[in-house]
Amino acid sequence: MSNTTILVVDEHTDVCELLTRRLDSLLGFDVVAHTTSPLVAAELAHQWQPDIIVADLNKSGAFAAQAYRWLKKMSPESQLVILTSSLRTGDEELFLKAGAAKCLFKDTPVKDLAHELQEVASARIKEDGHV
Image (tube, rainbow, N blue to C red; front, side, top):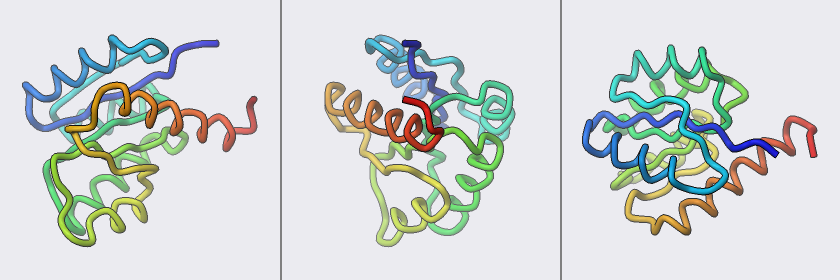
């Protein structure tokens, strides 16, 4: 069984690098690319078609939802997980409608984050019809 591939997108350079190292160190996950730029993220998503896109575009509301919708459109088979510091009222619903599989918080313990991402990856496998 191959590792779950991940694209990390976070507009804060330090957070992006830390999250990349953290996720890449987890058994069963392989970060194939990371970026701080939403435009580059769309290009990388299209190029790599990762199993999961872990993203925080540091925006909220309808503007953020549109950005996430666009990112998902670049890699329709990828599961989109929003990993954020906070959610404003209504944002989670907007992000889920935009195609996010889950909205999680950055302070989630690594063990729990790994479990959540494994669940998302498993859901993708079931959707694709693979066992």
